[in-house]
Amino acid sequence: MTTKATVFKKLPGVLAITRRINVTDCLFFSRMPDGSLKPLPVTRSGLRGTQNINKKATGDRQEVSNIQLTDSAKTDVEATSVVVKMGVSFYPLSNGLNSCALSKTDDESLLSEFKASFTDFLDRSATESFISAGLQEVANRYARNIANGRWLWRNRQYAFTVAVTVQCGDDVMTFDALKTPLNQFGNYTADELKLGAYIASCLAGHAQHKLQVQAVMNFGEGMNASMEVYPSQNYLGGDKPKGFARSLYAVGKSELNNSPDMMDLQSARLVGQAALRDTKVANALRTLDTWYTEFETNGLPISVEPCGANLDAQKPFRGNKDSSFAFMRQLNTLDVNSTEGMFMIAALIRGGVYSEGGDK
Figure 1 (tube, rainbow, N blue to C red):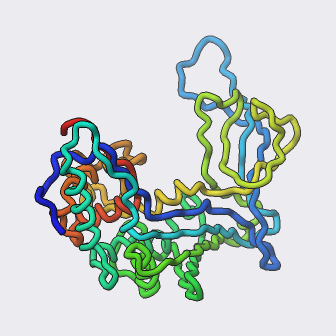
Figure 2 (tube, rainbow, N blue to C red; figure 1 turned 180 degrees about the vertical axis):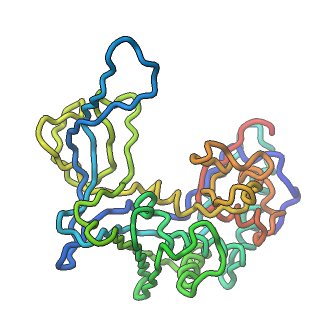
Figure 3 (cartoon, rainbow, N blue to C red; figure 1 turned 90 degrees about the vertical axis):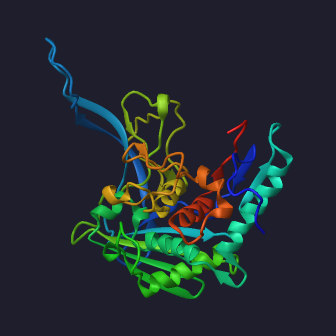
């Protein structure tokens, strides 16, 4: 079914898309000599560092000591490697329209016409017996970003080897993450295509699969024990106590006292098990947008965001004409296999709020 309007002047006043992917936190473990896994802790301790501030010298002698309390995450003293685990699930695109309602100034016909346009786009993306090339390509790109270990972030840079395994039911796929392209898509391996097929079948509503993902990182001979790893950092804002350098994300049991200033006069204290936050992992997995205009000069994929917002470049790479807001108004005219159509499929997987109030 198609709508009367080819392009909507505005979107409904209330419009929200539920994300079609869920990711757990990534938990860090030390692999011990007997093969067992030991939760890798975040510890809080004090240290004496140095002051390195680029400021104009004064007549007074500048203080060079920097006494601080900080978090760190290091492997066990007997660790032979680092293991990171997470779970990933994808859900049918057809169930993604969460809220869709008119604002006070919207024309009554907008609601039915937009819903028809939305349904038409999904029907052209996948049906009970069909998966479009556009949807399959987006799924393959997700598969590659799982396989290449992009979601390990900084940890990937320091590892000598990274073996990623993905278990889907009884099926197990194995990847050499460091040999899997990080910034290009295409020329997929057989296991990448198999994983992509599992993901596409979930998005099309053909099946429901839970992916259990594991990465085994080796940092080189003699470097796996007492090796620092890098979980997510916590943002403390204006509540950061004086002398507190860095707070790392940890889950589970903590030995910290519940002091309001986060200080603890005892020696190193256990904060919890080191982890990468689910939102950080999800951002890495959807770093597959090579369809934006500046890709030819930038050369790097960016995370799928409505306006192409990119923290590394500190700029949006998509404007008013090629944002997902613009394409949402054109769903019934988009070719699902075009670059615009594939970006829009990826944007629907991401989810978000697209409400527009007033006239546009």
